[in-house]
Every structure is written in C-alpha cells, then in structure tokens.
Length: 479
Image (cartoon, rainbow, N blue to C red):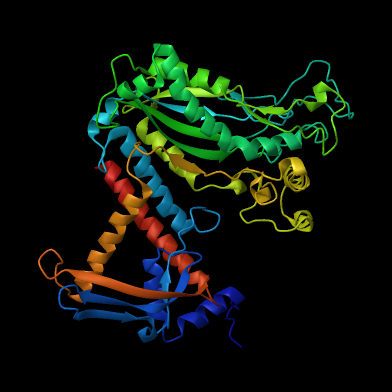
C-alpha cells in the first residue's frame, strides 16, 4: 500500500467541488464577489433595451448559467462576518475620511487648510478594571494601592501585576460584584443619544463663545464631522471623531479667521461637559421610591478622559497626520461588539447566554441587558435586542451631510466601473455614442452562504485578492 496521506473532510469536500462541471464558472463568480464569505445566490434575468426602439440588445438569464444562479457579495461591514466585504467597506471609509481632510472625490483641496481635530470621547467608570498601563515604553503596575485594601466583598481593591496589551485579564473588573453592570449597559444603550446631543450642543457653545445667535453663527460657520464607535476592553463603546470647521457653504468655503483649532478644542470640551442624558435609576428595579434621593434619575455623561488632537497634513507637526486618522477610523468601522468581547449575532433567548464562548464579565453585561429589558422603565430601550452588542444599538460610523463624499457615491462609481467593464466584454456600444439604453432586471433570492466544499476556494480567492491589493498599495506608497 502507498503511504498517501489522508485528506481532511474539508479538503476532500473542496476537491469534490473542484471536480464538478460548473466549477470554473463558479470560481469566476466568487472572484467577482472578492471572495465573499457569505455570498447571496440569485435567480432571475436582466434585459438591456434600446430606449428609443425597444430593441433588446442583451439578455442575461441565470437559467443559462452552468451554476443555475448568480452570486453577489453580502456587503457586510464586519470583519468577523465577512473579511472580503469588510475590506471593501474599510477602503471606502478610508477614502471618505481622507477626502474630508485633504480633498478629492469631489471635495476641494482647500479643505486641508480648515481647522480640524481628532477627538476621542470615552465612557465613565462603572467600577475598577484591570488595565495595561505604560509610560515612556515601560509597563506599569495595573492598579497599585497602598496597604492593599479590600472591597466590601473581600477581594483586593488593587492590582500590582503588569499586564501586557493582549492579557485576557485586561478589561475585567477587579470585583464583579462591585461593578455596576446595569449602569454600564444603560450607558452603552444611550451612547448614541449622548453623541446626538453633543452635535446639537456644539454649535450652541460656539455661539455663546462668540456672543452671537445660532442663526448668525450659521451665516459665518459650519461644523462637519465623521465619527466611528469602538469597543474598549471593558465592553464599553467610545467614539473617535474628526470635527472640522468650514465656512457657511461647507468645505467649498473657508472658515472665518477667528475659527481656530484652539477655539474648536475649547468648544468641544465645553459642549462635552454639558451633555447629560437622564434615565430611570436601575436601583429602583420596578419598585416605588421611598424618598427623593431614591427617585433621582441616573444621569449618563461622557467620561472624564476626553482627548482632542489637531489633525495636520504633515505628520511632523504637533498633532496627528490626516492619513493616520483616516486609517484609524476605517479600521474600527469594520469592527463590532466582538472586538470588546461580545458576539456578532443577536441572542434570542436568555438561556443561550450560558452557552456563549465569552468572558464572565461580558456574560454579566449580556444578562444585565436581558434583566433590565424586562423592566417597564426601559420598555422603550431595546436592551434585549442589542444584548449581543452589550446594549449599544447605534451606528458604528456616521458623518454629517457636508463632511465629504458619501459611501453611496463611492459605491455608485464602483458599480459604473464594473458596468463599463461588462459592456466592453459584451461588445456593446458606448452609451455616450450609441443609442440610450435601459436595463431592466427581475431577481429572486435563492439562498446565501457557501455550499459543500466551496468555502475553501472562496477563502483562497479572498487571500489572493487581498495580496494583490496590498502589493498595489505598497507600490503606490513607494511611488
């Protein structure tokens, strides 16, 4: 007998798929999706018709495909769900942010001279957690405490360990029973409202600083922003935002001379300090308050750590470079709750929580979402719906209307490019020279995900495309 090694079940399935007669065409479709991990299968047809005469110029039917269907990318932004589609989303977000910092994509280059900062808004403390602390490249003790005091539950209130960045203990509470899990998930649930109130309050602060009305301020100044949400190790979201000052017409007009980075810094700090969202106190837990102190609402605010740095085109100045900021925001635009220890899919029933592969800290946060979600005080807060994201149900990346180009614009350009490639491949006339055409399609959902033995080849295609993109980027940077 020959010593031929046995193949794993997954590899055997991949070999079987490669032997099927429709494999070559299926691979073309997979490459067209970028190696999508969860492609959508479609049945249907598309007609290209001469708008003037009604003549059918081209017909495409999935019934004529060897596969019997057409594949299209899932479009999911989260890297944990689909690495391929999330990379496309990341690239688009990078260009969206960068065009608002240095121009391009329809934004005038003069915008690079407008005052702008990179601000980080954090959550307050809901209890002591283990942390990686570093100063001048030296790792410091986590939470050293004189005389090693203990908490009311008999656990040490300090920690002298020196945690690495990837230490799994980082973000875990020193005492889970001391940690305010109810407050933490309620803060996550209202973080989006905190941001909304901040964006509404910032112009008001500017108007006060200048001694003018908000109507008069709009005649002189416009504030634009783009922000992304990121999970900290302790399971709480914080926001990174580019905030820019423009003239009244947006990036096309320069701001007034008095609109400076120091003034923007001052206004941001003042507006952030004024924002507050009152919610029913979880301490009542459905019972009547016995005194005025108990009836007081829980007031949610930003954390004390607010970082504001100027953004410059050059990295040599005392600030951060625009390209670094764009890359940072684009990176976290593809992250979800899984980056903070959560899960990337909804949790339907409370009994599922015990089976999740998460830390005990995250498990308690999820349980807190379920328990608070059953209380009448929070019936309007979808805590159970967003338990898998630890209570946060807001958008992970948003921008103001006039900050820069939109993701829809970038996708439209990409779709037009692919349509032009398809037109040339089919030998159709140039639409600018030939007759005006109309495309009519009818599509039906036929399933999603990869079938037996297909995931191996899709991942291989994704890796090849990712390598080609990386080489192209490195070549562009070198040039």
